[in-house]
Structure formats: structure tokens, C-alpha cells
Image 1: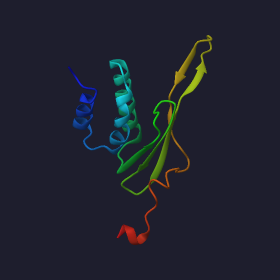
Image 2: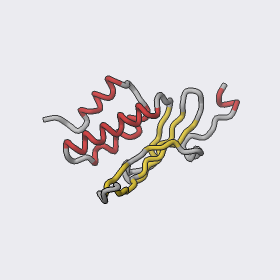
Image 3: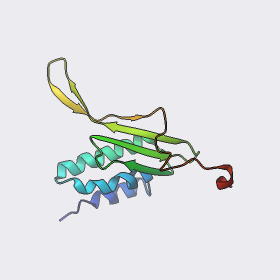
Image 4: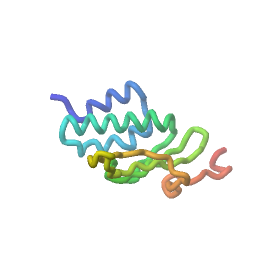
Amino acid sequence: MSSMYDGWKEFDRVIPNNPIIEAIYPLKVNAKTEDEIKEFDDFISKLVMKIGEVEKAKLESKDVWGYSLLHIVRASGARETWKTQEIFKTSMYGVHFNQWPTRKMKIFLGSAIFPRMTNKEEK
């Protein structure tokens, strides 16, 4: 019998020690079916590919799908916040559907989580 955490080994092999995966993966325990686990893994993979390499990452939410903020720090020291929020749309044929876009926000909202380093701390 396979565990829900078997997917972690897959990610760790492809992208070892990635802070984005480490920040989001613990929420995967809420996934109940194989389909939910696959959707979760696909979501994490998409974020890693979209955002790229980071030094630190912290997810500010217990619900990845409805509304979540992912705060990251890049190797250069640049700090960014990425927001995922569920939106509801209607196609031109009247079909209702959901989307979960992840967008980089114009301002960094994680100052309490990742405060800016002073010159003394950087040395």
C-alpha cells in the first residue's frame, strides 16, 4: 500500500530541498483520494516551475485552493508574494467552471515572516 507521502520522494528527486515544496507539502495530508493527491502534486509542480529557484518560502494559509499567499525570498535577496485564489467563471456557452490562478503580487506582504535584512545582518 502506498502512502500519501510517496509523492514527496518524487519531488525531492527532481528538485531536492526546494523551499516551495517544503512550505506547501504538509497541507497535502488533507487530500483524501488519489485524484486529490495528483491535483495537489500537479499544483506544487506548477508553482515550482512558474516561480523558479528560491532560498526561503512560507505559505500563509491552511487552504491552498480557496485563497493562499506564498511568500518567497530569492538568492538575490528579492522578496515576493504569490497569491492563489479560486475564481468562478462562466464560458460563452453558459458553462460554469473554477480556476485557481497564481499571480505575483506587486507588493511584498510577508514582512512579518521574512523581514528585510539590515547591512549589519548581511555581513
